[in-house]
Length: 405
Picture 1 (cartoon, rainbow, N blue to C red):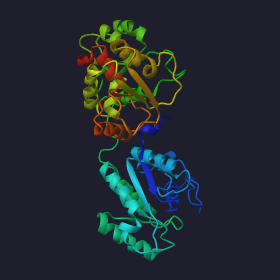
Picture 2 (cartoon, rainbow, N blue to C red):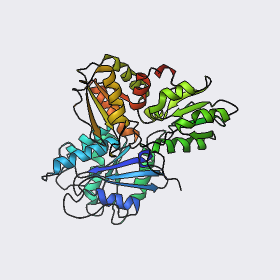
Picture 3 (tube, rainbow, N blue to C red):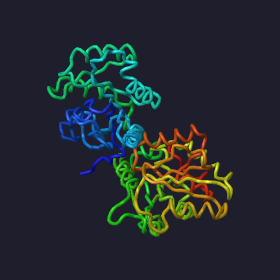
Picture 4 (tube, helix red, strand yellow):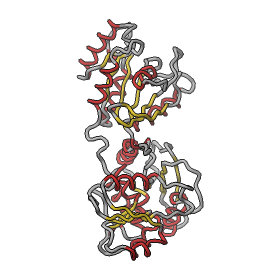
């Protein structure tokens, strides 16, 4: 059975103070023991990611985060992980525990309001949940009124013990879903029903044994869903494959590493693009990446480049990010060009020391997180581009590569 990759699921992040009821809310929402529940502050340390189907939301990843008021010795590191979870969050749930020490929301709930402001700035929809209704109904009702006055938002009152309000919370989540979520296409505007698409996928040392990489799998599945005719070959099979066809492919999608070879052999009528270029648009901002690639010509032997890869695999010989792209850059600008690498979620807050950032396709992250990286680069005015766009630019064929809409 085909399962939606985590990176393509709706990411629902649960945020609040320690012991505000976040974990209990998740367990009640999902009807599973996703997170450990205890009266001890700081029970949730690193974020807990749980992939599951939540009817009628569909494929979701629910994120339980550490309390943002954690003052333990590890609190600062836990808060950093919570911030990373926030960058991946498509739909945020802010959990409030009603207090008996007055309802001056600006004072008592300042941290919650600050997080609300952060999510608003990121265009992330927010659902307010007031927990522990069974323990303090009077304070919960008063807090709901104060939230409405301060933010204009309606909060949902819930008890995870009696399950009161849980159906209302689920309905509110549905209403808060980002508009048009899940409607983006990898091959947007490029192909239609019964168009022939040829995929060129080298099965070299970089290819995982016994399986295809995620961008290839997702692209094939989408093309089949769009009723295209799909043919897959390795690089050395390309000429033979083209000879067997009685019409040229509408579109050829290749691994970026053999862009030049495929371009030389493709029929004039066929459009050409790469998996990395497609994912640059699907997960990120392709026009911004193209602008970033133009800045490559301004580099020198004194420049500093950051290569950011989402995967955390052990690099192999001829790795595209660790070996091939750095070699192409240094061949052009000299061995003194400095190239640095980061993996996974290790992405610097301060980018000002770099002249260019080269991001991988981003298939392992959701679009929200990739766009947060782009937003950070934009804010600090550091050019940013993508593996496939860089290779197409350096080989001189970017003007001839078909870009998705």
